[in-house]
Image (cartoon, rainbow, N blue to C red):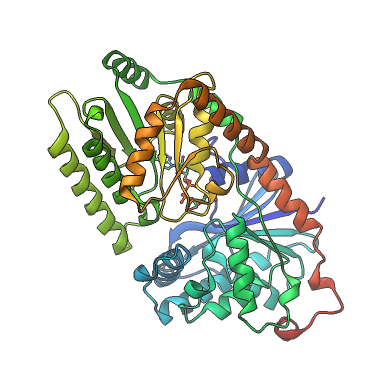
Length: 462
Ligand code: ADQ
């Protein structure tokens, strides 16, 4: 079997038994079980970049990583990846800060990563690059003469041509994507958008990259097991709610404007206005740890959310009932799992999301005999697979409030039927399925780098 080389912006710490975040868990398991190499930024900022990456061996896995300079970090990571590509790919042109300097930094870091990795490659390696920080790395690898198979998976949405083409660099980015043998997306919608964008550009190599949708999954059994062992404080809380006859709605998201958090708070407020019977009977627990605080849009959303939570509590709270419980930090995975299990409604209402693993984790954590109900945004990639959730438009405040009201009233047999269908689908399409399907497809790609028909800019570049 060829050696697997995984490339992601950050390398996971394989010495830690549990990774945070579904992606790190899936990839860490894959590379641990079959061996290979993992390359990425080591998270450090140093005065100068080295000539060679640092290499450590953990079992049969080679961990290869390299630092960034402050300037590279500011341009590549903060400036371009998170202030241009993230909003652009989430359809938020209003938040895009287009800067040529940041783009130059992005290209420079992708080229630097390619140089660092190229030194470590063996001829029959299979390379799998992940996500929007590394869109142009394969192009740079090809320029360095790398002829190995290269696959790419985009974890975030791919926007329609009308949105993408607002970027002055969109043609370059599309060209770079075509340097892969296989480009994977989360959903059919993303795939269609990509195909549509290609129709608008002139590219002699167009037919060479294969593309398809590979919806990412979670390790369902593992998460279900975690949910079984509730800590004492979670159990006590559930018992207390049981005695008082109170229901709990839960939301768990990184504090990101794509997750629709202010819209969700407003919908909860509307629920209490439209259906006063939920006063003192329902609480909403939102866990939202901070991320990317060096990008201003993130501190803005944090302030907005804190203001909203305070206003709702100020207006509706009673001395023994707090309607909104807002936790602004990370929570251990096992605790999250048991909180999902003891919550009647899982509220997952992003304005736009590649997949959204929380939707799948909420379903995996439920007691099949007495499951809660998932309320899910149409605009989460997960909605393509999870039709039995209550699907909502997150921009429609009253609509979301009505859906929550409906979710709280669904009888047991209907809850069981919806949950069984959802559980079946996420089990069939779990993390292992995602990984194997992508890698099998990549192995089966007609490999252009070894083909005599190699032509166009790629030939010129090599
Ligand atoms: P994210 O935008 O980070 O991922 P998501 O898919 O929901 O979004 O994954 C978040 C992960 O972090 C989940 O496993 C969740 O349990 C965990 N998490 C969230 N809040 C937490 C907290 N307070 N404490 C502990 N853990 C927490 C990106 C894309 C998604 C895509 C994934 C995977 O934006 O659309 O589904 O990659 O491809």
